View 1 (tube, rainbow, N blue to C red):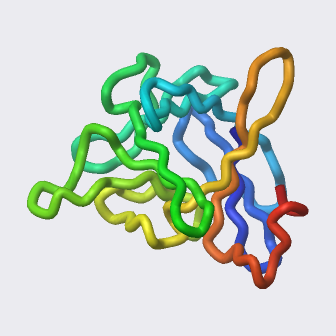
View 2 (tube, rainbow, N blue to C red):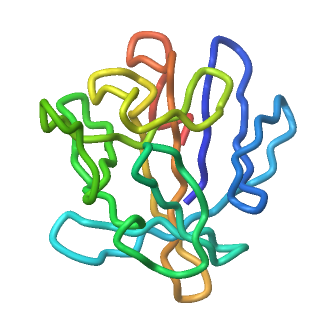
Length: 157
């Protein structure tokens, strides 16, 4: 999976280095991720290069894990605008029961899961399968300002 964030005229690529997510402008270093199905509409997100899993802890912070644990499970849902959103299978808001979502802010930094709303662009991703060496990986396009009116989605993927 390949994660992109797009803002105005600049394409900013996200690179996973030791699974801490760094922000890079105009230098596109590819971060590929495997979406591994672990249940019905439940996936694990694993870095192809590092082999580490994305996980969310009890405070809503994203971190990397060498081992697959319950904190590595994310529910994959297609939102009404055809974007995909990922919510923690383990953690929710205590009082309201609202899910905690995986999201990136405008600078490409991970946000706390309890601060990300499913309706906001911070949580919207577009995974795209990539065929190669018999393994299916995904590009993962993240958008804050990408809209159908100002960008052709098919050409940007």
